[in-house]
Image 1: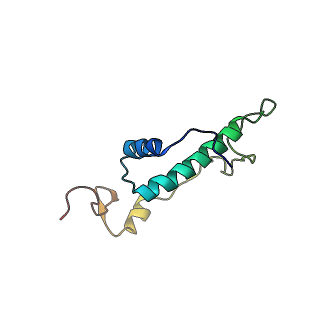
Image 2 (image 1 turned 30 degrees about the horizontal axis):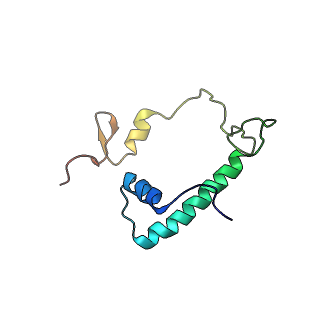
Image 3 (image 1 turned 45 degrees about the vertical axis):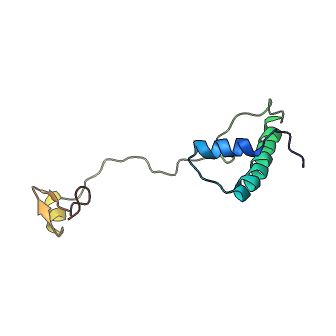
Amino acid sequence: MSSTHPLDANDVIKVASLARLSLSDDEVERFTGQLARILDSAAEIAALDLGGLAPTAHPLALVNVLRDDVVRDSLDRDDVLSQAPSVNDNRFSVPKIIGDAP
């Protein structure tokens, strides 16, 4: 398939520079062909007549699988905290994980 997009190695080098990537000459050559094929595929999709189709974000109908919220009794705070390995000021106490390293 011949490329319909006038893409050359300079374009790939420019995109790589914007992405702060360093490419070898072999990579530039390989990615030039790959990017041209990607752009050709995008052009084929853009050329499709989709006027009669409704826009969609997902090919399958999505159904909410979550249960309805129901108010109910919760666990007793004192019972739960009595099972915790460490409690401070009526709350679970856990080791600090953010901040200065020891």
